[in-house]
Figure (tube, rainbow, N blue to C red):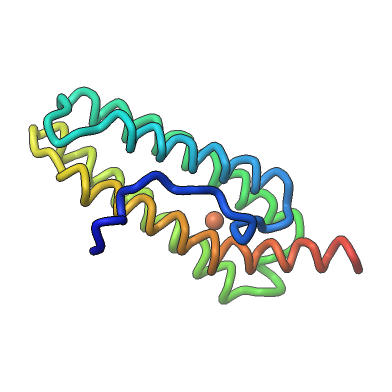
Length: 145
Ligand SMILES: [Fe+2]
Protein backbone atom coordinates (compact mmCIF):
# COMPACT_ATOMS: atom_id res chain seq x y z
CA UNK A 1 0.00 0.00 0.00
CA UNK A 2 1.43 3.39 -0.93
CA UNK A 3 0.78 6.55 1.02
CA UNK A 4 -1.27 7.87 -1.89
CA UNK A 5 -3.87 5.17 -1.66
CA UNK A 6 -6.39 7.21 0.25
CA UNK A 7 -5.92 10.51 -1.51
CA UNK A 8 -9.03 11.76 -3.30
CA UNK A 9 -9.72 9.96 -6.54
CA UNK A 10 -9.57 12.22 -9.54
CA UNK A 11 -11.90 11.42 -12.40
CA UNK A 12 -9.94 10.59 -15.53
CA UNK A 13 -11.14 10.34 -19.11
CA UNK A 14 -9.68 6.84 -19.19
CA UNK A 15 -12.41 5.79 -16.70
CA UNK A 16 -15.14 6.37 -19.31
CA UNK A 17 -16.84 3.24 -20.55
CA UNK A 18 -18.76 5.14 -23.23
CA UNK A 19 -22.11 4.08 -21.74
CA UNK A 20 -23.61 7.32 -20.41
CA UNK A 21 -25.70 5.80 -17.62
CA UNK A 22 -22.75 3.80 -16.26
CA UNK A 23 -20.34 6.73 -16.51
CA UNK A 24 -22.73 9.05 -14.66
CA UNK A 25 -23.10 6.56 -11.83
CA UNK A 26 -19.34 6.01 -11.68
CA UNK A 27 -18.85 9.76 -11.24
CA UNK A 28 -21.31 9.68 -8.36
CA UNK A 29 -19.40 6.76 -6.81
CA UNK A 30 -16.12 8.64 -7.13
CA UNK A 31 -17.74 11.68 -5.47
CA UNK A 32 -19.11 9.49 -2.68
CA UNK A 33 -15.65 8.05 -2.05
CA UNK A 34 -14.13 11.52 -2.02
CA UNK A 35 -16.72 12.65 0.46
CA UNK A 36 -15.79 9.74 2.73
CA UNK A 37 -12.15 10.64 2.25
CA UNK A 38 -12.79 14.24 3.33
CA UNK A 39 -14.99 13.36 6.32
CA UNK A 40 -13.30 10.32 7.86
CA UNK A 41 -10.41 10.34 10.26
CA UNK A 42 -9.20 7.43 12.39
CA UNK A 43 -10.88 9.20 15.28
CA UNK A 44 -14.27 9.46 13.55
CA UNK A 45 -17.14 7.91 15.43
CA UNK A 46 -18.35 4.41 14.66
CA UNK A 47 -21.63 6.05 13.64
CA UNK A 48 -19.91 8.06 10.92
CA UNK A 49 -18.08 4.97 9.63
CA UNK A 50 -21.40 3.14 9.62
CA UNK A 51 -23.27 5.93 7.90
CA UNK A 52 -20.69 6.42 5.14
CA UNK A 53 -20.31 2.70 4.43
CA UNK A 54 -24.11 2.29 4.43
CA UNK A 55 -24.60 5.11 1.91
CA UNK A 56 -21.80 3.79 -0.24
CA UNK A 57 -23.07 0.22 -0.16
CA UNK A 58 -26.61 1.19 -1.02
CA UNK A 59 -25.49 3.30 -3.99
CA UNK A 60 -23.09 0.56 -5.12
CA UNK A 61 -25.89 -2.03 -5.03
CA UNK A 62 -28.15 0.25 -7.04
CA UNK A 63 -25.33 0.80 -9.53
CA UNK A 64 -24.58 -2.93 -9.86
CA UNK A 65 -28.26 -3.51 -10.58
CA UNK A 66 -28.14 -0.91 -13.36
CA UNK A 67 -25.10 -2.57 -14.92
CA UNK A 68 -26.59 -6.02 -14.59
CA UNK A 69 -29.80 -4.86 -16.30
CA UNK A 70 -27.70 -3.45 -19.14
CA UNK A 71 -25.96 -6.85 -19.38
CA UNK A 72 -29.33 -8.61 -19.58
CA UNK A 73 -30.61 -6.21 -22.22
CA UNK A 74 -27.63 -6.67 -24.54
CA UNK A 75 -27.20 -10.44 -24.25
CA UNK A 76 -23.89 -10.27 -22.36
CA UNK A 77 -24.51 -13.51 -20.49
CA UNK A 78 -25.29 -15.42 -23.66
CA UNK A 79 -22.46 -14.05 -25.75
CA UNK A 80 -19.70 -13.42 -23.21
CA UNK A 81 -20.43 -15.90 -20.50
CA UNK A 82 -16.99 -15.91 -18.88
CA UNK A 83 -16.84 -12.09 -18.77
CA UNK A 84 -20.39 -11.91 -17.47
CA UNK A 85 -19.63 -14.45 -14.74
CA UNK A 86 -16.40 -12.70 -13.74
CA UNK A 87 -18.19 -9.33 -13.66
CA UNK A 88 -20.97 -10.54 -11.39
CA UNK A 89 -18.46 -12.22 -9.08
CA UNK A 90 -16.59 -8.93 -8.68
CA UNK A 91 -19.82 -7.14 -7.78
CA UNK A 92 -20.75 -9.83 -5.23
CA UNK A 93 -17.29 -9.89 -3.72
CA UNK A 94 -17.27 -6.10 -3.29
CA UNK A 95 -20.67 -6.18 -1.61
CA UNK A 96 -19.71 -8.97 0.76
CA UNK A 97 -16.46 -7.24 1.74
CA UNK A 98 -18.34 -4.04 2.57
CA UNK A 99 -21.01 -6.02 4.44
CA UNK A 100 -18.33 -7.70 6.56
CA UNK A 101 -16.66 -4.34 7.26
CA UNK A 102 -20.08 -3.12 8.41
CA UNK A 103 -20.67 -6.22 10.53
CA UNK A 104 -17.41 -5.46 12.32
CA UNK A 105 -18.42 -1.82 12.80
CA UNK A 106 -21.63 -2.99 14.41
CA UNK A 107 -19.52 -5.05 16.82
CA UNK A 108 -17.51 -1.93 17.63
CA UNK A 109 -14.50 -2.90 15.50
CA UNK A 110 -13.44 -0.04 13.29
CA UNK A 111 -11.45 -0.67 10.14
CA UNK A 112 -8.51 1.77 9.88
CA UNK A 113 -9.53 4.70 7.67
CA UNK A 114 -6.51 4.19 5.40
CA UNK A 115 -7.30 0.54 4.85
CA UNK A 116 -10.97 1.20 4.12
CA UNK A 117 -10.32 4.00 1.63
CA UNK A 118 -7.47 2.15 -0.07
CA UNK A 119 -9.70 -0.89 -0.57
CA UNK A 120 -12.59 1.20 -1.93
CA UNK A 121 -10.47 3.37 -4.22
CA UNK A 122 -8.42 0.48 -5.60
CA UNK A 123 -11.41 -1.74 -6.11
CA UNK A 124 -13.35 0.93 -7.97
CA UNK A 125 -10.52 1.97 -10.28
CA UNK A 126 -9.52 -1.63 -11.09
CA UNK A 127 -13.09 -2.68 -11.64
CA UNK A 128 -13.83 0.25 -13.96
CA UNK A 129 -10.62 -0.11 -15.94
CA UNK A 130 -10.64 -3.88 -16.36
CA UNK A 131 -14.22 -5.06 -16.02
CA UNK A 132 -16.68 -2.24 -16.72
CA UNK A 133 -14.73 -1.08 -19.77
CA UNK A 134 -14.99 -4.58 -21.24
CA UNK A 135 -18.74 -4.41 -20.78
CA UNK A 136 -18.77 -0.90 -22.29
CA UNK A 137 -16.96 -2.11 -25.42
CA UNK A 138 -19.49 -4.89 -25.83
CA UNK A 139 -22.47 -2.55 -25.40
CA UNK A 140 -21.03 -0.02 -27.85
CA UNK A 141 -20.29 -2.80 -30.35
CA UNK A 142 -23.94 -3.85 -30.17
CA UNK A 143 -25.12 -0.32 -30.87
CA UNK A 144 -22.93 -0.10 -33.95
CA UNK A 145 -24.05 -3.46 -35.27
FE1 LIG B 1 -19.34 -3.32 -12.78
